[in-house]
Image (cartoon, rainbow, N blue to C red; front, side, top):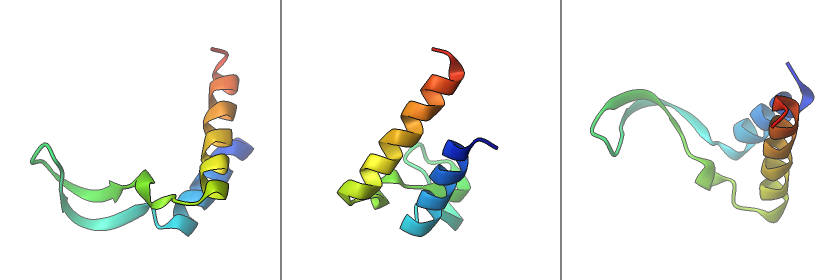
Length: 62
């Protein structure tokens, strides 16, 4: 696992982004989990999220 992947997972966990349960999505489908990036609401959190996305793009070679 790359460092940016680990950092993203840690950020998501601390911010409570990933929740498990029974969720009805906007599409009407049921899901056992819900991933809500809106939970990352601080400037520092958004900066870390942006850094993780940038590292992912860089690693992909795009």
